[in-house]
Image (tube, rainbow over all chains, first blue to last red; front, side, top):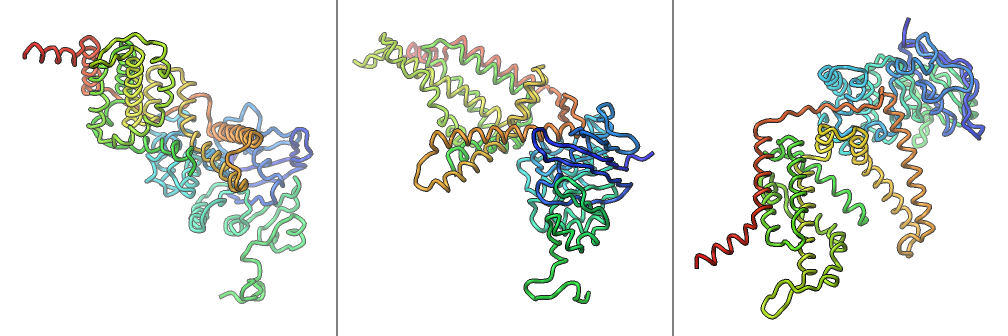
Length: 257
Length: 269
């Protein structure tokens, strides 16, 4: 039995009094896979993510983590094995100091204060934020906040990492560091993003959402090279797969250095 | 920067000060909270016409300031900023209470004026002490102390969250007001209509954020209890600090030292 498998089966959900939501979503993500979830604004990415750890209950269909579907009863176990990194780190860092914040999860899991602290320090070291331990969250830069937010989740040693736009609002260097950091994780990863270049770096597989439905599910590079599919789903190729508008070179014809 | 930003974001500086490392900083937060509470109660309990007996009480805030090395100017400015509220309380005393209590030369001073001065003195002492308490303890330290005093957890958690998110909210509010003023050119101040929709918008944003924070907490196994890491223990110096100041406050409350000293000087000559 593995907790690392995430499976959605004909998942439907619509927000009350609207027709937006998600329809008939099915996929299966196996151990160690890294999957990008892409789609235009309002395509249903966040709605889908909110189903994966039980914030939203599907109208029909089901989501399973490991071998069991998510129910009210096993919600706690599910949330323990699925770590979610929010889009706005300010929402995620609510405790007085970084250490308190990273310890929050482990303490809730019932760890003794000492081992919770160890788990927290270890997680902070992992994301390169060990020096921030005593700082209050509002005194961190955007990149630091993001790293600490990831540490808060890592400290609970989840099996699956879910991230909502991890590279948003980061400067290019911080984004580079984040990508390197995420590459080093062996977890099953599901990353909702508009940053398709990052998706190329991190995810071998991509799921495309358009108006609440899956329009494609397959190898990242295949999907991004399919112009009609990209157009129909309201997406634009990642920058590095477009021709250079300044030197006029077509990347497909250019010889690799 | 707007008035709002300048003055409220400045509160954060208090928190920075609280990261200092002097002996008042190192005392247990509980002791500091308790001592300050005793101080405030003693000062407030003084007779409404007392002025001379109040002045020696300044020894507590002044000595804390001196020992912790915090900048006195900062606190004076903060006290000045909120002083209008205290002034409002005593503003009509000189009109209502016109009994002459004191003569300086041929000038009669009424009880109202004396009580007004007394109110301002009390205000300066108590607010000053409270601000210094935050400056040497940090807001979180105070919350932890309250928790140890068995203040219901709901209130403590509320306070902690208020302190964490007031800045985020103020930030949002000031961004909104900046966006408004940039597009309203010459018109000064928001009209009542714009203000209404801005306030409504802010409320909606705040609820949205509260929801997301709650999700983030649930996500990490929140079950209604907030566990914090800090464990503090009382040392002899903490007890001495509390007892010492309590004795001082008691003496200052029972004896009017300026009067005693004055009488002493008069008798001597």
